[in-house]
Length: 247
Image (cartoon, rainbow, N blue to C red):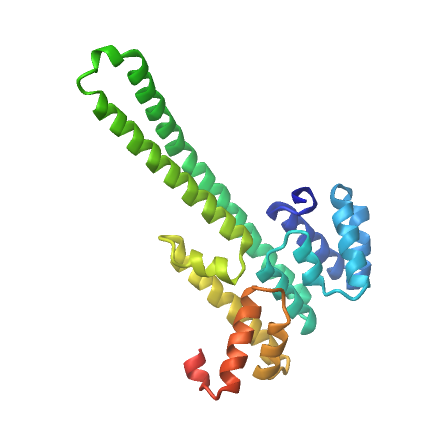
């Protein structure tokens, strides 16, 4: 099933192709029909999206099925509704580029520490194996050091893998967990605020009321940032909560 999903780099290529087709004057359906011929490597996924949209499925929902995060899918759906898809694709293209750049930087910066830790573990194992007869009295110390180091390495690896998984997932609950992480938490908070304000401002400018925006948001992919916030805000509005308190 993973082979049928578009990776983050492929999602960026798809967005750029679709944006260019729309700029050249093609309609959305015509653009989606054209992409499999232009990008043969992923023609199966692109044909699937094209057929889904022709059958009446929203573009964001179809893209969600081929690997796009629920939050990005919801943002695309909202852009289609207010007729602002081209501008949305430009913003998403820039955001995905920045995300891929930061992930690449993170991996490169972790490579050297990982190499050092691997060398240290190898050295300790060699010391235990070949010098055990000379370290009988303090053997428990070396065992303790090795065990502690291995535990730290496992924790670090689990943390990095979990962070990357949540970044790729990018639904409401993944973003909420990431905002509590050290270093990247503050950046993710700004990213979430940007997404919410961007969607809200665009829809308000195009004449949608706040209640209508909440209804549209609640219809987006399950657990997306827009869907969860839309349902929550609509319930608070119906209960008579002041706008200032909701914000």
